Image 1 (tube, helix red, strand yellow):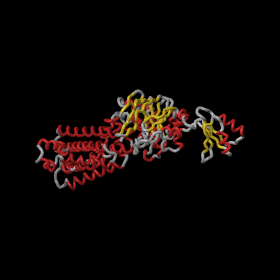
Image 2 (image 1 turned 30 degrees about the vertical axis):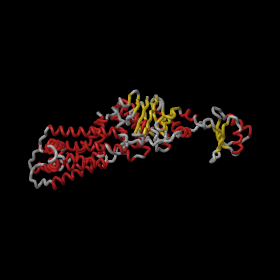
Image 3 (image 1 turned 90 degrees about the horizontal axis):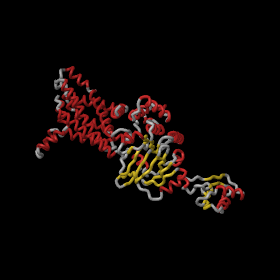
Image 4 (image 1 turned 180 degrees about the vertical axis):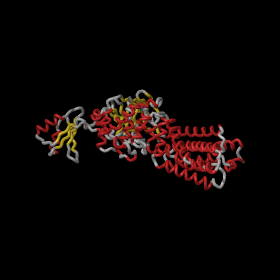
Length: 244
Length: 313
């Protein structure tokens, strides 16, 4: 078996060996429910659509994904297992990707467990399941970008709290970059080209595009680049800081 | 086979390892001695491929650790300082993970797992999570992880640290049993361990090699080497008689237990002469011993020659 696969299995199993996984999944499902039904008013909207559900995902991820990503490398460095891991016959890339995929799969599992919401709208009405599938896919892609950012900050410190906060702040910046409040703020004094540049970096706008049901190659490339860049940065940071 | 050439590691202004060169052949068990912060661990981390050297090279079985890291790492079993392992995993799952990632498969995988679990007596704790194990067992899991793929080279950073005397004995027996065909480096600051497992010892301090010899030869550097020590009811008479022997350089009496030690002049043997003298003069002794030399004394005199620097190990 490929080292990435072996690492992936070990990492994923380790989530479920501690209460972390269960706490995360329960809190995630609770919050998703609250946002969808109370804040998003799914019932009152009288529309068979999961738009009120997916709308809140960036904000859910903002707090929950850093909680998953903060331990990825910080914990390995604190406990010294990073020395064990990186003296095994695997490359840095295999280690980074194995860990990332396990975390991504874990968030994916939590996301899949929201299926009762999907059943609900299908029971109540006749939603466009193609749009819902695209939205789920987009949401998962976005969580991957959050995780990749989080992995980089987890690699840069052995303190999980610091990793959590830095990840939250940077992810928040990437979400807000597409909001009119922010773009409006800089629109007046920055050239349009730069404003467009900032907007196009926003996780929000790319997620928004996909959750409307349009899977555009540009959005896929954006997420791929985003994840690739932050994973590469993670590998560089680990290489620099592993022995500190 | 392990070879280092002018291996160095600097952390900012601090030089942790300063141009270390040595070569260890199969069948050798090299004891790495030195005070805390001497650079022992850093050197081992560089050989294991965890720390990148600032200068110089390390190679394992002919593979350069930096240029061919995967080939080098396949040859090495490494026990990092403190024997870290994934605490939330069960022992069985952890060892299987290591076996998989080391590329063991099929019959060989099963055989290696059984052999390692047997050697380290881990059979009774396979179902326990590593966090719930005692320190001794955790250390054994770390050792198991290092020897699982039957590596040609073993790098063990303080393998007996924190173990009780029985566990220490077991780990030393394990190292001795594997010593015949492997190249082994063991770091320790327990000097008795050097005699128990090593056939070569390197003393390092402030990142430099200060001595490289067999444990016996190192001991012979001690001023206690070939000295004769005894206890006698009449301390004064025995001391004065010994001091008159021509080959005796000096006589010391331990103020605590009144043990008398006669030091020979350089290169002289005084054991027979002391025995004859005591018999001829009718001085009663309750015990008489030929000293081999004291490693701790050699260690101190070698490592304290210059002021220490605050480098991290």
